[in-house]
Image 1 (cartoon, rainbow, N blue to C red):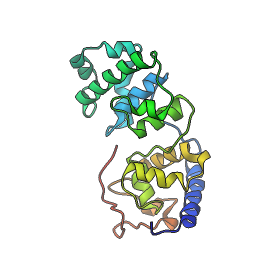
Image 2: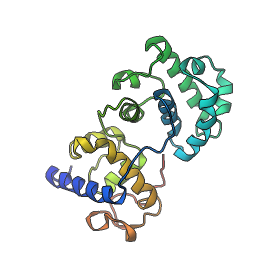
Image 3: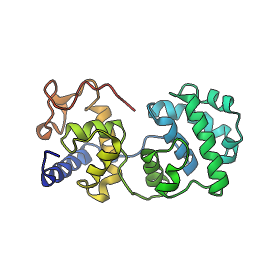
Image 4: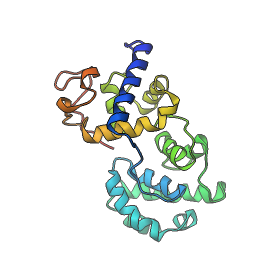
Length: 227
């Protein structure tokens, strides 16, 4: 990567300091009351807003009580229950399959290791990281959603493009004690200021340390991707 490691480490610390001041209480915005609800909510959140997910799960979690209920659900009925969510047919399939494995292989409990979680249908490293951090209080990595992906590149913290490689870069420069909060800080900043299409660079607390300038950047500030 072009920027020296020491420079990126210093940049990461400065970014954290400023965003902690801007967002003193970063936290997850999905609603859940247990580990299974968290897992399902995160699975549903792929390429969908947390606000939409919370509206759907408010009824979904009332209807289905535990992994056995999801595993036994009619596929079409479950899909209909979440039909306002993006890719609802695939997500319904993944939820049923994951819950079948949770019942059959994990005694009805959401597993607490990265390998076991990513073996579940529809669960990648991002989802597993969220479940470990917020369901099991275990932090093994950094959750890289589209906000983290976009802003980390704009700030010059990584040149990588895939979530896996971005996570590896970030884990080398972000202090481990801040891995969990780093994601929520960047999500908050991405929603409030550093949006995908029209970042508000004039009113950004990171503007003077950001190598990307709107309209003149190696990072695509016109990228419209979200969740």
